[in-house]
Length: 487
Ligand code: NAD
Image 1 (cartoon, helix red, strand yellow):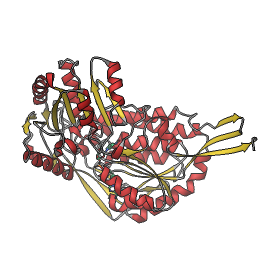
Image 2 (image 1 turned 45 degrees about the horizontal axis):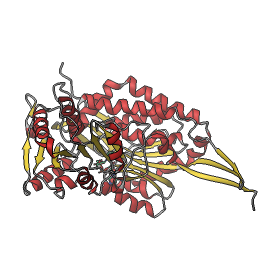
Image 3 (image 1 turned 180 degrees about the vertical axis):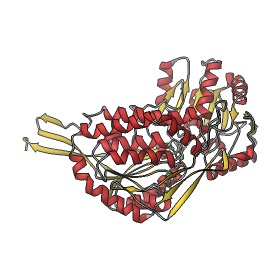
């Protein structure tokens, strides 16, 4: 059945229970068919952010004083809305993002699971009393006040709710900025959510990072910025937030390594798992495999089988069920991946473009890049050191575990890594030596880190931990009330 493209017009500014008009709008185009308009969205400015922060500040007292069970109930309500409208939301997400229907469903369903997980954590703010020879200490978690939440385009739904759910549950009120690329589906969901919350608890301002984002970072009444996005933007945000000493949570870029140890047989299953862990969402996942290290004894076999499997990938529109991989989402990211490929061509690397386009799809129709496998590379080459965020993957041999640990840790990033081995205990031991917030054993696929598993980066991959109880605690101030009996 041919699916009719839809033109979605979204008023993206929603403050204190009201839709706010804006004079400017931004048109959004299908990255798989760049001349096809998908929708448009209003663009806000700094004055909208000021209005939104004031509204959030006003509603904070009532919201924080509600029983946590009441706040949790709202999380369940919005999860029900997403689930009930899954097909329609998936369709729009594919059109504006380019990912496949299956990948869009993962983005939305993971948000549903995350909301329900946090709704179950109603004891997360419980007070703790410590009695000992010093006397009595009562530890209390307080909400922070107004939190700014800034969302990236790659998995906008789950990434928004991974920040929003713990923040609201903790009793904060929020100003949220959907990404400039891929804002439509998320804004639709957020507006529905904002309507069922008390006025001012959730305020939405769409617009650019340099105007809307900047004001959200610098406004003195904002107590915390929760940000998911690139390390470069993270740096700018840290500088802006420093003026008023805001709390920061930062989930930033990654350059994840996968280590295939000598004892791991190179089976079809292993290769399929590795392919999915690399090319899902066209490589545009913060934690997907971005460099591969294979023990030299297995290197040739691995490269051969991996290349054969990648050659079978079909590239095209995410709405076509025969397609395995969609396009890059937007022009700047497309140009950045192309630039990295061009720079790699200037090294001694061997670059192999594989895979095919779906019937009727031309390379120039969208921001398409075929799966690209790079061998004969040095660890210091840009294709190994930089985050590609696209379907280009370097594969390197190693001789010893000591050597591969050094190679993997030789990076300013430290988001996630994986160890593939027949000896799971040994995988855990080797994982301890890797400098990353997560280490996966025998997988690296989307979803490997679930909502209840602390997630975040070592080094320049981030500050703080998202997911789990830790994410709620990061949206609180810890107060100690103390009665000393020993002095
Ligand atoms: P980006 O940094 O370009 O943009 C992210 C958000 O920040 C957008 O909403 C953007 O409008 C906003 N922004 C841009 N400039 C700003 C400024 N000066 N002040 C305030 N806000 C500003 O990132 P992206 O291209 O949307 O996402 C891709 C990057 O995000 C990759 O590096 C990826 O690894 C990273 N990422 C990390 C995680 C994680 O959990 N660690 C998850 C997803 C994506």
